[in-house]
Length: 252
Image (tube, rainbow, N blue to C red):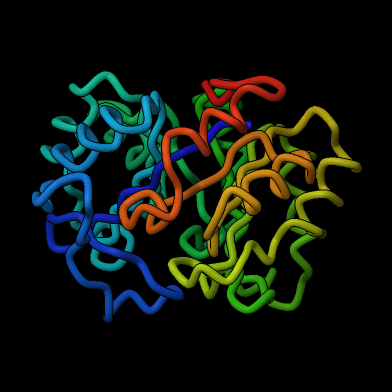
């Protein structure tokens, strides 16, 4: 299982996400750096935890369509591979993200107004460059596509797998930054059992090494973490202990 640090960007700076209440996010406070510049925060995370991949949520793009292109390019220059959610709506949006330095493009259920357009993304970019995010809040599916509003997360996963998606993020926004544990593990276990070839990433609520061990036992390929890295609840030794069991660095 790979540990994937998370950097949320709002108003151009790194912020701490709490429970998906984006209007209340504040600039990140970290024991690793005094900076709130995303590239500097990423550099500090890499120095401390030796990460080679990072999940970036560009909230300015998701909320207002205003992408932090220069910031993403600066982050990409660190050499860390970027998995970027920037509220992509079209193939052109995705191409722009690639030009800014994204290694993998997140297509999010909360952003895409018509999920049937996923096939076009797969045709253009191939499955290796794409990650589909199954967005939840308090266990309920969040989707911009009204046709899917009454469907279950399991139904949505089955659909995206059927059109060629091979990497999923399963994330309950209500758990993010709370330190209350990862609520999506049973759903992830279901998906891994149903489609063993899938790479599945989750997170939200991570608070200790116990969470890492539990997530690994659930079959996750990647675990998204932010707050627990910045405030010291997780140490480099904690991450090394998990990396030493099974495959590592497997999210390409």
